Amino acid sequence: MKMVKMRKSVFVSTIVVSSLLFGSVGAFAGTGIEAIKAKLNHNIKFVLDGSKWTPKDQSGNNLSALVYSGSTYVPLRAVSEALGAEVDFDANSSTITINSSGDSGVPYNDVTASAPAATSAPAATSAPAATSAPATPSTPSTPSTSNGKTFGSAIPVGKSVSFDDPYSYDGLAYTGNYTVSVTSVKSVTRSEIAALGFREPEANSLIEYKLAKVKIVLKNGKLISDDNHENTYVSVALIPELWGSKTSDGNSIIGVTDYGFTGSLDDALDQATDGKKLLSGQTYNYTAEGLVIVPVTKGSTNYLTIQLNNKDDYDNSFFYFNLQ
Image 1 (cartoon, rainbow, N blue to C red):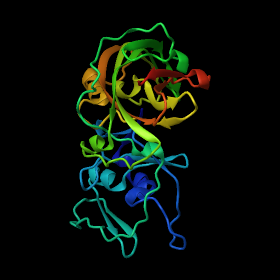
Image 2 (tube, rainbow, N blue to C red):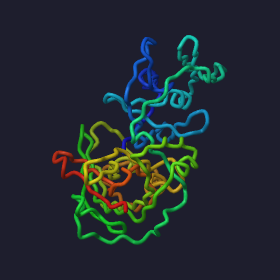
Image 3 (cartoon, rainbow, N blue to C red):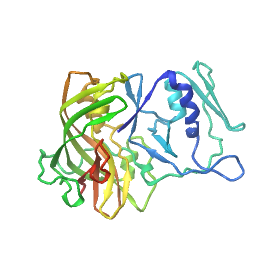
Image 4 (cartoon, helix red, strand yellow):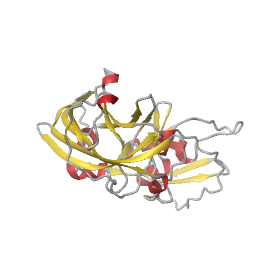
């Protein structure tokens, strides 16, 4: 899982690149607006002044970061106001005004703005679903004899796989041993997704959604080095990467939603790690179990996919879990 950490010292540069998200993504020729294809990444999280934070729009709907041409863009208004600034959009002059003092008193009303329809990728519609627990009862996971590295040896529901997942990049290194299982799965509808206050995913003949309960057990998590003093949170670093879903016939959807709703895996991880940071000389252990929304390819056998930090052997860097 990626984490976007917002600090006031980087606010100015952030709002410049994130102005793209003030309105809808789209274009009409001759208007100075360019049509693009971008993806919403619901797996990117935000940390505001050391605490996890979920940006929301004026109606209270959760917002996600957008990925376009290798860059990540964040919701301008939500981020600005969270940092004490006010944002206003003048549709007549196509001007975004940012008041860093946060006391301009300019009301927000851009309903007259003419904005073309959004262009979204299939994964962009992933959002939290209903808070009810999956229909299949959770059962204790037992070690799986399958290794989970191929679709044919995918980990069955209720079984688990254990693996080490070391990380090392730019002076930050840590490691841990994880035991992961999908303990239950059920299908969820678009209306159930909307029931939590998220925008209802658009109808798509190729995509449906699963609500999976995922259990993670960490043993012997350790910080090896932190040369740049990043003070990384345990709940950010010592977690396997939930990559998305794949099918054996080559289809894949990148990204899951594991936060922002009651009973989510992210909530369970927060409780299990208690806001701790990685410190040298300490050993970390936890058990967390919570819900994850997984967009899947309709009409196919789908697998929840975890990817290791070490991607040198890319094809061998994945673990597959049955979602049937």
